[in-house]
Image 1: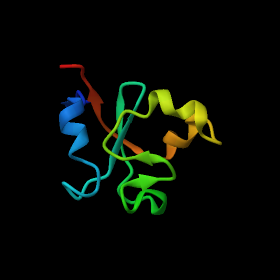
Image 2: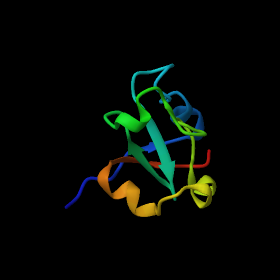
Image 3: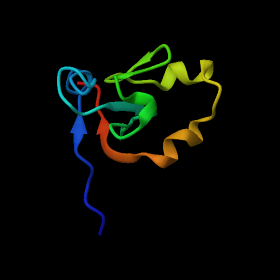
Image 4: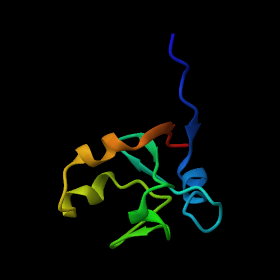
Length: 81
């Protein structure tokens, strides 16, 4: 049986911006992805997008589809509390 993913709040996610903590995480459709090792997120910023945020509403402006998240590890679920 697969272990349940840990949950994180928006406030906890916000700390994983590559500056407050070394981790670089982003959320998309309720899942949190670790993009720390991505060269495109090295500074915690990817074009006009910042790490530590829910990018669900911002993807419509991206030149790629949501399949881009397939290459990153899911490390948790975003909860609204």
